[in-house]
Image (cartoon, one colour):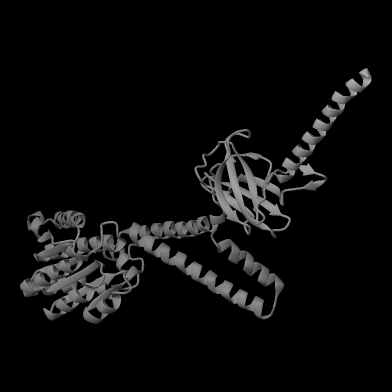
Amino acid sequence: MNRLKLAIPVLILLFSISIYAETGIESLSNDSTKNDSTISGMVLSPISNINGGDVPDDGGGAIHISWDVKTDSGIRYFRILRATEAAGVFDTVTQLTRNFRSYDDRDGIKDKNDYYYKIVTMMNTGEMFESKVFGPYQSKAQWFNKKRSVVLLLAVIFGFFILLYMTRAKHDPNLFIRRIAGLDALDDAVGRSTEMGKPIMYILGIGAITDLPTLAGLNILGEVSKKAFEYGTQVRVPCYDPVVMTTAQEVVKQSAYEVGRPDAFNKNDIMYLTQDQFGYAAGCDGMMMREKPGAIFLQGTFYAEALILAETGHSVGAIQVAGTTMTSQLPFFVAACDYTLIGEEMLAASAYLSKDPDMVGTIKGEDAGKLIILLFILIMVILGSIGYIFNIAPIIKLFNVVKDWFTLG
């Protein structure tokens, strides 16, 4: 009897343990979030070979993560999680579609700090598989971007030719530069205004002081002003931008001092009109109609007002010399003006007029560098065509290597 009383509690205890174990196994099977651990010899996560590291050839602040997928069937998306400690709280960085196999994390990454990652795979069935923690990874900045080594090569080529021709220009002041008709006509334009007793009007367009055409126009203004002060002719410069006006005043003032005529400089001849595009065009047209200048220079950045200005200048009988890098406005200047500086002719005007050895050497060096590049392109076009037409493997390989090298990353 005593044995029976002792056996009953033992049986009840064993029965309770078996029920608890079955309940625990059932709750484990119903848990939708699983990790990379192995259960019954099967790896639950569909991703593998997770790798990470610094993004190469960049300025830092980025970590590259990649992974492999056994099969993407049934995968809905990937979620990238990040933490600063392996046992810390992981925050969601981004969510990617199932087609992704890598990701560059640039969200708040600081160089030389440790970062840990996990990847959660969401299935179409609603299950989520969480990878193990991987890391730590650090980002860092590289001194040199190897993908852009072609830029270094071009800089070396252009630098070599520029230095070479600058040295040559110092020994040979008459280094050849192609004649530019619009610049050769500068003396004629200034002389015509002097003979007629009329002022010169110089329009710098509607560009800011940071625009290259405006800077080139200011350089030409300096040379025009020197000639005008030598001949005793007034130069009128209506400006669109206040900063450009101030700079133009200094340029004209410097020109007056260089030719020994500081008394001829009048600050009020360089005036500000307005920063309204067509208001500025109307103001310049009004000055043309009232003062009837003998020569008009249109040098700078121009847009829709170009033809309005050029037509009005033509109607008053002025000799007009225009120049701009705005290709959309060049046809109007060619049609309505006597001379037109096209594109780089305007940018080269300062070297052409001043004959400064450094400027002339720079122009010659740039032209030599461009010639080398054009010849190289021509050679590669011929080689590539021969290789693919006649299916010559070594030439095709060489062509592709050069093409890939010149493709900037």
